[in-house]
Image 1 (tube, chains in turn cyan, orange):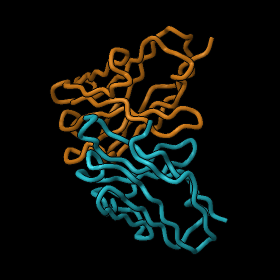
Image 2: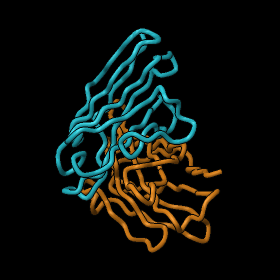
Image 3: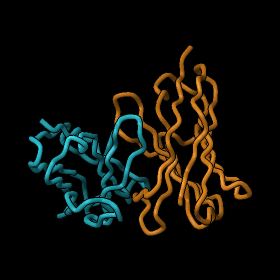
Length: 110
Length: 120
């Protein structure tokens, strides 16, 4: 029952670019900051992007984020095998007074 | 450095309760809240709720209202999440995370996760 919708999977060859969309509404993405997380099996999620487009220290600039209206996008350039993981968007939902996560997208490097 | 260290795996029977701990270090515990997130097998991330380590205020996801209690012990910088009336679909990895003061959906630091298995 995620409030944010993501494509189930995206894939590309090493070195190429992928984009992951995150669709919401005015009660969440439309009026709040979006964060993005990388989740590798058996590990804790890792913050990749916050405030829609900012990267924490240590996150390479191959990862980028943007937001327009009620949608957000994560971009990964120069795809590497180590980027194979599940990616989640997250934001505050003002109507629910709760954090909502996206449905998750599995990135596969071909 | 900031660390969140969680308690070990648990196996519980349906109807029982589980209490997971999350010990924080490397920062002033009472300056931040603690959020709990879970991931069931094959499912996505699910926000369970948040507690202020400053004053104990809580905000639980509607789905868990009445079944979850989040608490903190400021003397040991530890947060706790208790889930009652466990069902098989509560089988999941439970994570604690530290939210940013500025954005409640920004989690800079996470615990390593605690697997809770509910099985008869």
